[in-house]
Length: 350
Image (cartoon, rainbow, N blue to C red; front, side, top):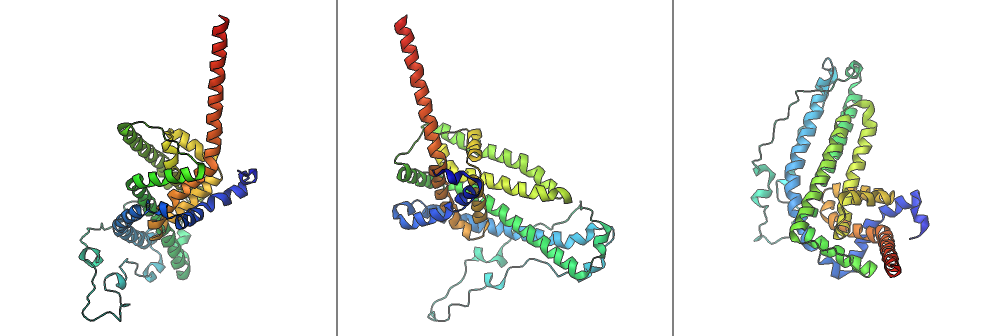
C-alpha cells in the first residue's frame, strides 16, 4: 500500500470510502450478490421486529423525559405550562392503506396485514416514571419560554439520535450473527478475488461454535464494562463533553470489529489480537468503523447497509491487514527455518 495513505488525514479518508467501494463491487459482480439476498431478507424481518418494539417504546420514553425535565429544578418553571403536548403517536399513513393507488382496478383490494397495523398491537408499553431526577440550577427555571422550548427540542433530538444508534447497534449484532453463514462465504469469495487465496484455520464445529460464543461474550463485557460508566458520566454536565465522544468511539470500535471479523476469524485470532488489528490500522479503522456505525443507525438504510459493510470489511482487511499479516507469517517461517538449520548443523557437528 502507498505509504502516503498511512498518514493520518489520508488514512481517515481511506476508511470512509470502503462502503462505497463495496457497494460498487456488489453492483458490478453478480456472483457475489447471491450471498447477500438471504441476509437482506433476514434483516428486513429482524428490522420490522426491532423497530416496532424498540423505536416505539424508545420514542415514548424520549417524550416522557422531555415532559419531566421541568421537574428537575427546585421549583417548577412558569414555562412548564407552555410546553407542547409531546406524546408519540403513529402517523396516519401507517394505519391506513396508502392513497397512491388511484388507478388500480376496482376489484382489487389491498390492506395491511393485521400484525403490521400498529393500532392493533397489544404490546404493554410501560408508563415511564422517574424516581431519580438530575438537579438543574435555579436559573434554568427563569429562562424565557422560547429558549426553554428550543432547549427541550434539542434534548429530544439528541435522545432520538441516541435511540437510533442503539437500535442500529442491536440490529447489527443480531443481523451479523444470523447472516454469518452467508457473510462467511461472501468474505471467502471476496478475499480469494482480492488476494488470490483464502486462509482458513480449521478447528472443528464444536470449537468454532465455542469461539463464536466467547467472542460475543467478550464484546458484551467490553461494551458493558466501558459503555455503562461512560453512559453514567454522560449525565455529568462537564464530563459529558468527553464521555459522549468516547461512547461513540467505543461503538465504532465494536462495529469495526464485527465487519472485520469474517476475515479475522478464519485465521482464529484471539479477541486481544483482533483489537490489536484495529489499533494497528488506525486511523483508517476508526473512520471505517464510524462511517459503518452511521450507516447501520439510519432506519431502512441499515437493512441494506449490513451486507455492504461486511463486504467493505473484507476489502479493508485485504488492503490494510493482509499485507502485514503475510509479512509476519513469512518472517515466522523464515525464523523457524533458520532455527531448524542451526539445529541440523549442531547435530552434524556432534
